[in-house]
Image (cartoon, rainbow, N blue to C red; front, top):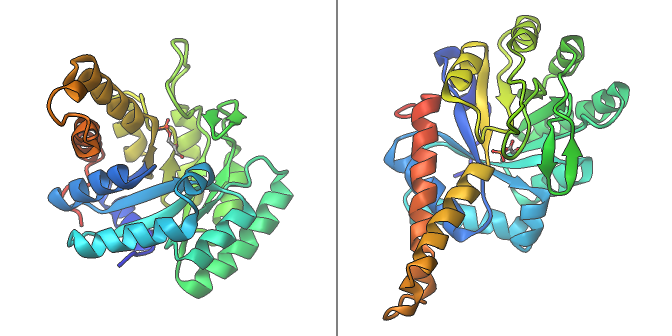
Length: 287
Ligand code: 13P
């Protein structure tokens, strides 16, 4: 059964580790992430962007696939199915379809509008026992065609949004989605420390987990980050393993063209990436 992300993140914040949000794209992705979480006895959050939701036919298909897998793979670790960077309408649609957690990303609105919309969704999610992630300060990089500039959030605005009663808060601290450029300035730990001071026990979310050096991840966790989002890194691992298989001509040997064989190296590569992240985030055996 899907669970809200509240309990797993409250525990993570108190225990000074982070739960990974791994974005899913299809059956192989979902199965690889769920099996790895179960093998490592780790809680996990499956992230679905609006674009990925559309790609997988819609939110109901996603809910059906994930619930079916939890049942048929015998997954007993806590799993939250979470909308990533949702619009207001997208958040409502996911809630209706059966997601257990949603993100409303109002970071591109003026703060007053972000507050008003987030507040409405807090009430809606509270009634249903679902977790809600809000965002202050746009995360840079490109995701589903939306490009931000790696803003650094205003800690006072973070406090205003946190005080609305959201479950977890994503704040821009110079992080970006996708690969980091050579001249990246790194995370703004001073900002993170200030946000943590003002928001207390609120679990903080670090987006753009791909390519952040391990030492920075550890420092961010020590400063209150309890959820870390990873997407691009699984895509790169999947693509590299698939490329290697095809370039070695294996799809042309025997029944190597069978999708169950063709996609197997990519599947294993996602598992290895998720394992590496769970080790780094400290969520192993925290289910
Ligand atoms: P990356 O693609 O950089 O790992 O970011 C993932 C993310 O933050 C999803 O919201």
